[in-house]
Image 1: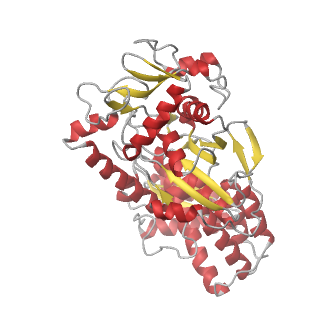
Image 2 (image 1 turned 30 degrees about the vertical axis):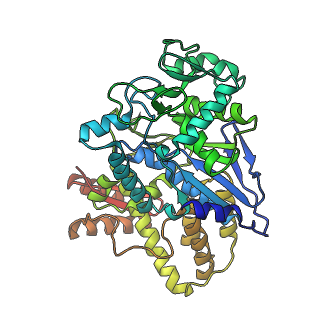
Length: 485
């Protein structure tokens, strides 16, 4: 989306229909609140994007499935949504603090390319991953931080003029002691903030929590710009505030990101934005929990990172990962394993097959139902995707609903969950694994035994398959068979 599109959106008439009520958990208050936008019928949504020094791993990608599900729910409820996901291509240092080298410079030097080439490459891979996960990228603006250097400098100048910034030997810093509400997001105490800042007072820095608005150029920096303070580059926290002001305005409705951004990055955004304008910066802050593996956060530094390309190389459809994410509430930590992903793939494949059958039975005609209303209520109650999936599965299995009612429910589920339920891509199988015929026969025999409540026989058959190298997991949509490593 370009500038002309944004200008057109600014002049679009809001929908005459009154949007339905939604409820979201606001990190700022710690409570679930009714969503009341700044402008009736419109929702301004900003999501912290990736630093494009390398490819985004699946832990990073959870945040964008969450924000896409949020945007879909807002749109279905009748809101016109304007969405931004920024691309960080300068300012993010290797220590996530005000010291060390810029991640883009390190990557460019390592790969023997320019920072811009690195940024373009990994930004494209990121957006390609989002598309594969069903994210509506055509409705999102992806601004690069390096395209908004003037705006960042202007914001930093305003803060200095208002007495919220001071100069040191290595740059321009924000004085957090001047902002009384610093740390209000997440209700962090002064001691917690000082510990989280991780940077001692040095070079004229007044407080441990103070952060760089502009860093003076250092030897080896590959990205430098002129500024009132000298040649250098912007601090990481500055870009989001500056781009939000440039593209959405001084106040927005919703800002999303991972929970790791709350303590420092998002509190810094609030401090600099509200000091500059004197207005509330964001009405609703929403954060997703970590994706973990063996109880550790998935991260490049821990070398436990998994990428969407790894999943596709194993023959697993990317939307299986989206389904896996949706099985947990966005604020709940989620543990990744290949077995759990395989189970999600099997469940989604069964859901697609059910959808195909219902499309034929209903002639793709919709009808309202009580299950449809319960599904919508779950999604509008803080994006309760696990509950919504449970309602969907129960209704599809039930004989109480007509095919037309089931198809109507699938239509609403497709709009909210982004799983291609109305046009299942079954020609591209969820996973290429195919068990031998004798193992499949044992699985079918076990299902017959379970239906007859002969659990002793079912357990014996499971044990036999396990001994022959195949594992059976019983998911909400039926058994999932995987080959043991």
